[in-house]
Length: 296
Image (tube, rainbow, N blue to C red; front, side, top):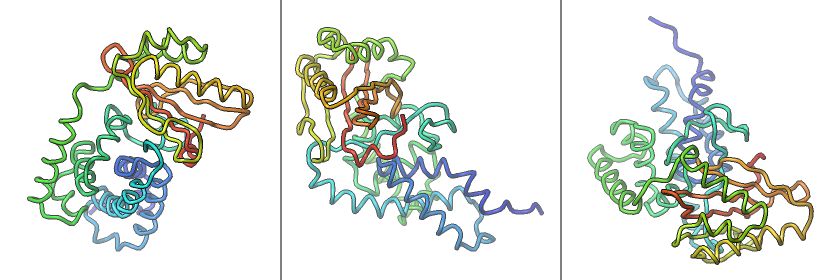
């Protein structure tokens, strides 16, 4: 009979997965980190000899903790000032996230577009969808995680999947696919080139700005190439008047982005969503509470 792995080692081996589950359910880096830490404390108090599958058991702990946080967050988001956007998550090589947070999220699942679609689901639907469609857990494991029957979980996932598919008309381009468009966009933004920006924006492009009522940004979605280009450049120009502007290119939530620092302090992370050959959405997070975990 083989010796059971050390519980500490088991948790460490699954930590990136656990963070990823929590982030997909919550859309918050800080909350996901708190959930993982709390789950670790709960894991330490478990009788590990009775745990047959550490991965499934840990996923259950994290899911239940994340659901509790999400249900409280849903009520707070109803009073949120302006558009709500997920906290930016640096994405790159798995295990080598520049912000020091290891995760396993890749592809469209981590994009802001997908996370916003998931916001329309109930908390339980979201957890079921994430566990099944993103992380491929089995229905018995998911049922244990959310405290529902397998039949109920299958129905929840079917409804969630239908809702998600109805809102996803075309896939978001990968960073590799969108690089030529992103380079033109980012260069135009950095140089103040209005026409250069407009040339890469889709006719129905939308700008969503998240200031959380704490800093200035658009309080409603802004549509159209001209308005979006001028708004974005206006925000950058305002930042330049406030201090020394430092614009850095990166990748957040599987999309090309710019991080804007003013006198060395992170002011915003703005990501672009590319579908086909044009920028279809610009997501600008300026809420300082959502930038504390971001490294540049």
